[in-house]
Amino acid sequence: MKLILLSDGHLSAKTPIARLDDYRKTCLRKFEYVLKYAQKLNAMILQAGDLFDKPRDWFILLDVIDLLKKYHDVKIACVYGQHDTYMYSVENREYTSMGVLVKNGLVQTLWDRPLATWGVCLYGVSFNPDLQIPTPIDKKATNILVIHGSISDQALWPGQQYYPANKFLQDYKAYDLILCADIHRHFWFIDKGRYLVNTGPMMRKEASYYNFSHEPCFYVYDTETKKISRGKIPCEPAKKVLSRKHIESSVESDTMLETFIAAVRDDKMEVGANLVDNIHAFLKKHKIDKTISNILEEVMSRYDKEVE
Image 1 (cartoon, helix red, strand yellow):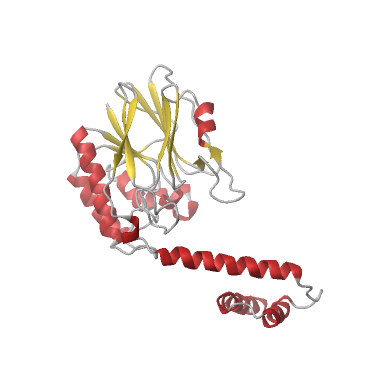
Image 2: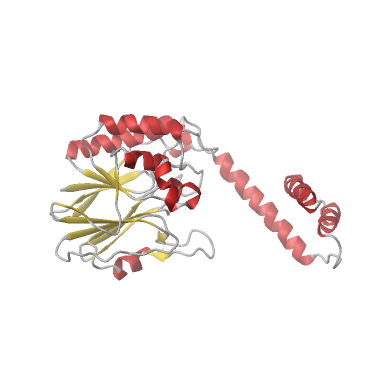
């Protein structure tokens, strides 16, 4: 039995600010490529959450339904990511785009009770701040876990809380294969024939330094040989579909904000004075960049209304 492993999908009808192409069409083209590949191999697709970018993206849902009906012989098992969950409400998951697919039998969800097929037991953990990892029931079976959680090979920002990927693989030795998502990075670890894989995002929706080098992919896992191989998803060069202006403006804004915060720390404001008056005086005294001052002015105007 062969399994196609796919992490974050982030299908959407709306084109993100950093994309230069028709994001919706690109989503559907890439997703169909994976479906067609799975059909050719007679493989089942395991998808680790955030198939959709928004919980209720009705505009792309119909296109996805059409694709799944076209490749009706391809089975898909998945878990819910936070982007598939409306207002982080587990109770309302059935009223989402993913919920519609599940309710109509176009995909099936994995839970703490195994989905058993051909000597393989599939377990799933959907997005949940309190991760509860199920213990495999059949130790002799090929046990596979699909999970949406903060499992990473490194911190993506200072102070990020995450479960080290290599440690997760060591801590859950009952699983022969672990497919994870949520962290938008491609990495994989191996330990004595056992694997932990994150294929990275199928869609490079953010203009980040990482995405300018990331190549969307999936993995193919053979449950009989327990071997794994990587398959690339055809994509345009990053420079053709991602705007660097988004990165440059973000860096510029971050730099200006850091400068402002440092200046606030060093400046002696009048203790006991009105907060808004204090900030106005500070902006005038230090001639803060207009971009930052405009944002602060807008926030303070809201603050004034709330106080009134």
